[in-house]
Image (cartoon, rainbow, N blue to C red; front, side, top):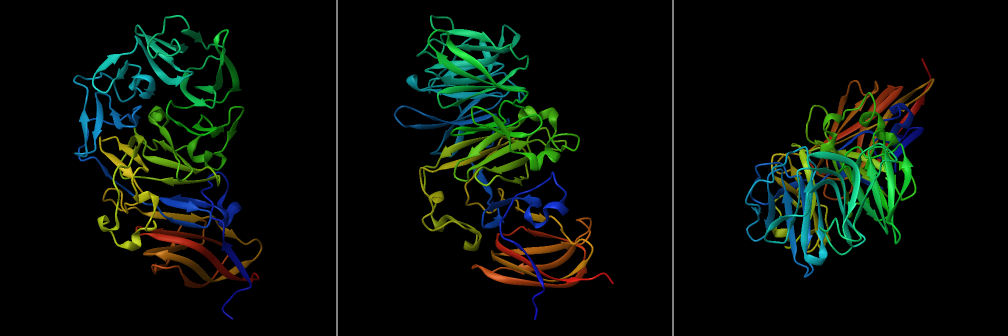
Length: 496
């Protein structure tokens, strides 16, 4: 009989665990889950990106946003340290709209909002505060804010530069129904000095405005008597960088100083315990000197939050932490270039199968997939070298660069005995998957087999016949694979 007396089956696909010892979580989590998509029933190599627009900009994009007018017309805008651009979909290129330099720098985060009553686009950083009416640019006010939001039919700004002086605790608001009247009846300001930390960002949640400071979270509610009332909700937990936050309905997800958190309006719950060791503390791989360039985005169709961080010596984000909200799992994505920001664009054309350039086995979407139709949002990733890419679930490379998907399990450890590994059974489809084994906790690896996969799901066997006390598995491929089942068969043995 070829089967052993024991089996170890990986049935629920979990994400990475960098906090616990691999011998503790075993096959229930991964040491590495890189450039993959992980669902409840499978893991597969991630899709890639392709160029968006034919021209490369001379500076890093710091902000991308879709500007939708009252008539429903969509205008995609992009801001660098020097200029404001608009996307020309007919000629597939970015067109510079500003005639002179904005005079900013790469270390001043940009924020933009739509003032719907007038079809104006407001944008600001610590070096300016302007609006665009679709043709011309004008100054909004003499206060240059870090935080900017439209709330309660007015504009609120926070952490301003005024006359060359920094005011990191101030919040100002306009007269209701106006975007630039900060002095008339109904306007006002408040110095949020009850906690000494500085304001980082604003984000609306329902009928309240959440104010994120460096080490506290406040909520502003409307009040007829005083316009706004400010409530300290969470002390000692705050936002590490102005754009390292993303909202999903009634939840905000953000990177703090000691963990990643989800805020529901009442409490901030840590959600990053399993990734803390590599992100925070003495073993952190993050370049915290440039954390202010980090950003986060919510990917609605995947129900994921992507946190872009600079790691190693990189001065721009070069590493993405992906958090699946509904499954509470983490995995990672890396690209061959650094990323400066993100955006969304509503697709105007239709992708048909005859336009695809790779073998059909590389594509996982259905013939009538929404991802190939018009009016579907496309995720945009801006490279720090000025090129914008689109993550559209169709591309099979990263703009021509090979994507290597990789997973590494924890250790199957046998206490006070050994096991004889008999067989690894793999259920998969795709193109190719190479397997490796380690018997010393990941210090050295032994090549096992390269599986040539079929277009349909099949079962593949790798025979071992090796006696071990510890065992972990690695899978790697630069070609597409989808893994839906993994079982290790073994026989227990006594010590000699």
